[in-house]
Image 1 (tube, rainbow, N blue to C red):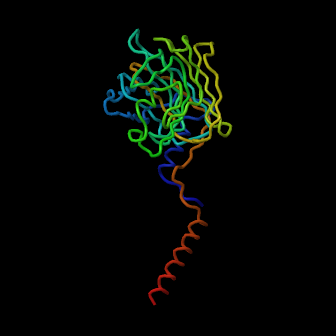
Image 2: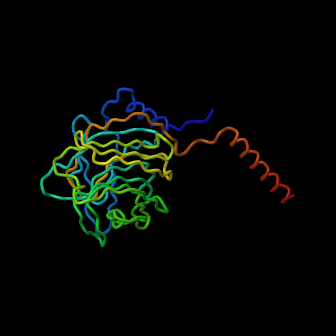
Image 3: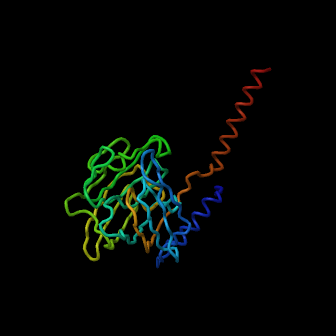
Length: 269
């Protein structure tokens, strides 16, 4: 039987708690915050968990910031609501990250309220689905503020997978939006739906199999006072990122090591 790491077992138990048939709002108390605090950028994000642990607000105008569920999983649906709680303050990015491997490699859905230039690039009003595919595992080394800000064409290690841009495609202050993600329910398929009440704002399916499992999380870039609440998950398969070798593999390894030892003895004889 394959050995199972304690971290993998803990992740499996956490997933079981959020993927029952009648899904309850996810307890966010085990999630963790991460900000890519680029030189010359803005402050680190501040994620404030509300009483009850089913809602969180990011309250700082920050560099790209994530709130991650720490579950390396595939084949799930997740949905919930989010909104910007301010009037006329800021007009930047809010969204979600999924298939997250590390801070250099992940998928990102982001939504810009208004067209705006920053760090030499121009972000268009509206929604985008992006893939970040850095060479390493540290976004501060592999990625840049420009790659996060750009949403009209691929740039560096950021590839645009889909866009929904127009002069009326931005989010609106204090309006509640609903979000649905189906991730890898069909191999390589990403399905996203964004709604305002009964009105469907975007319903998009993208096919890309670069990342078939990974963490899910909330995302802000240069946008404060964003509240995420009532997220529920159905399905989900935990994928151990560091699986233990099968017994057969261990046996082959032992044979190989024994052979090397015998060769060394013959050379020294």
